[in-house]
View 1 (cartoon, rainbow, N blue to C red):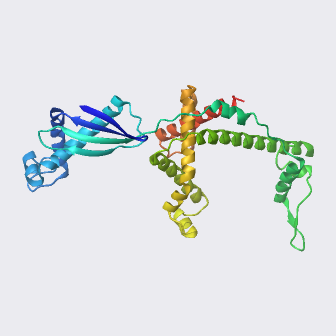
View 2: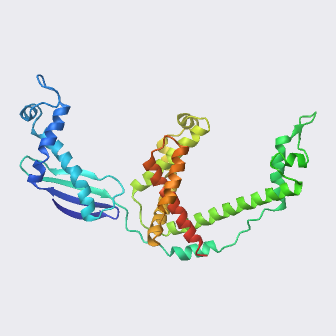
View 3: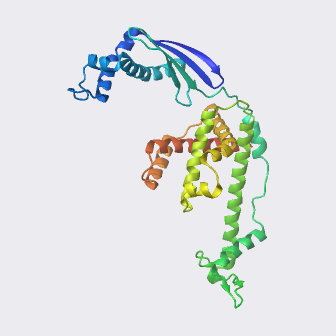
Length: 335
């Protein structure tokens, strides 16, 4: 098999492939069998129609096209391996020459990830991670949180006005085995502190990754962005369903089409794609690894929780999530 690679753009490469006539002809027997199984002629059972009858009825091209399909399926992985092509989607395939007794000539156009150079991500992470932000709950925040909890026990007076009770030990003990009101208030403060700390960490993580992603100047292939749009749409559909609403009804209510939503989300999908690419590149640069036992543990738990999930897809998703966490932890260590 002779192949020639040509760069069409930053995100596309073309491979011109010539499959020798001897190799191409080896696909004929299986092609005839497959074609025979799909046609029906009087006097013959499916799968037992003679080759000459198929040619007579449907023409030689009918068999040649199936031979080409078989040859292309075999050539595809060989081309990827030979030219070390990291395709991000299926190729566009075009048969250039298809004739009996001749080599098969095919063009493969692969979408590929453009060459990406990361900025100084360690410096960016250091500048953002070392910034300080108070994560301690204020007295007003604690009081407001307790007030929200006390509303569960509110009553109404004669004028239908809501009467929120005072905090008592009896009420506090409805939320846990507290021995004093002060102990309950301390627990509320600790919970608020933890929540603010988590939100501050998430904020720094996203600020860091967005700045890194923004400095990646290369134009991303739309196929990558479309993949992210698919994930966003799938999650949105699930969220709508969990709210007890049909996705179709939501579209009717908002007077929008799914295509209009995808168009509105395109910029956000591109940003998410850039962030994920940056996360992946950093993981490779820093040689970060997700321990196999950690991944298996997460996958086992996940498939127990969601019985119908495909284990292979779950593994890929969870491996990415665990690797992302490793990258975030690495970036946090730069401060």
